[in-house]
Length: 232
Image (tube, rainbow, N blue to C red; front, top):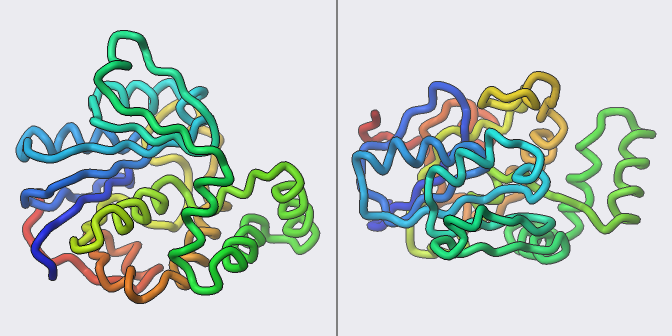
């Protein structure tokens, strides 16, 4: 393992937190709440919260978790967000147009943008639905690519080229939204998880070798390194 450690958090239930100091934390959507718990024990780190712009706008619970975590930075994908005026001066906000976040993703995978296009076909199961979904995505210029959790992993890899990336709470197996909310009662993430599983298999080796996870699900799906340190 490399010397420096970076932590990426998703909100998968019952996931453990690594028991070690990290330089930075990246979270996806409502997983910001887990960063609060980690920072109670390890204070010296910087927090970046990645969230879909629509998720931030419509999911009140996820929005509250992010604001409560008081991150140093929020990165909103595919749109703009507005923070409450009480905290807006203390947090750096980056709002990425869909084309920017999509282009960023492409460099991590074999065959680059072609892999992203093929991956989007995995969003649907029936052939006719695959074609319809991809056509609409291209027409509306809204090809999302990876989930926010996977995007957090890619961002951590990119911004910390000499560090280990330790992942907790990201399984890529789909299911309902991991943290409870009105939206989680009906919104199922299997479709985007299928996209993630396709793309993790095409992640370039120079990136994949720096990933370590505490979650058996991600080891099974992605065949990446198991993190074997202490946890809490």
